Amino acid sequence: MLYDCRRPPKHIHSWSDRVGEDEVQLIGGIPVTSPARTALDLACRYSQVKAVAAIDTLGQATDLKITDVELLAERYRGRRGICDARIALRLVDTGSDSPRESRLRLLLIRSGYPPPQTQIPVYDEWHQLVAVLDMGWEEIMVGLDYEGEHHRTNPRRSNQDIRRHETVTGLGWIDLRITLEDTDGGILGRVADAWARRACTPSDFRARFSR
Image (cartoon, rainbow, N blue to C red; front, side, top):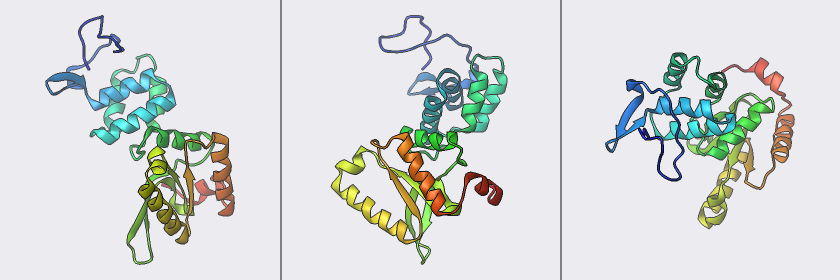
């Protein structure tokens, strides 16, 4: 939201900045920064993980195009935080359905794994879609699904998840179900085991597959 007063309302964080006319749009009559400008501000001002998670979510909710953000980054090439912003923008994937999925994806990348594909469709032997995995590596049939609180508290959803997991593993996938209780070390250990079962390493993967 654009605000022309140096004393914003309570609980609203503000900062002074230069904003181009083409970086503003109206929503409900209120001037706000465009999705691209908002993404650039997030990438410049927040930590990498927080920025990427926020921009992933922004991309889910708007028609955000990363190429537009990169053009803005060129416009503000001397801006504080712009170098970190460029790195963060390369990690954005709007296929992540939640901030925790974004953080999980970044954990894998930071640990040396190739960037996982998001929203992987899984088909049965009759070519019918049976599931969409949150992320993973289709080439070696290793997937991860982040299960939020609603998966546990909704009995019907929980039962559907169990049936879905059985179907996916029955088709030859290794499907790792990740929850809030899992530690980073525990997650990485399970991923390493899955890759070992496929007799594959990140280096092998990069040599064999290109995207």
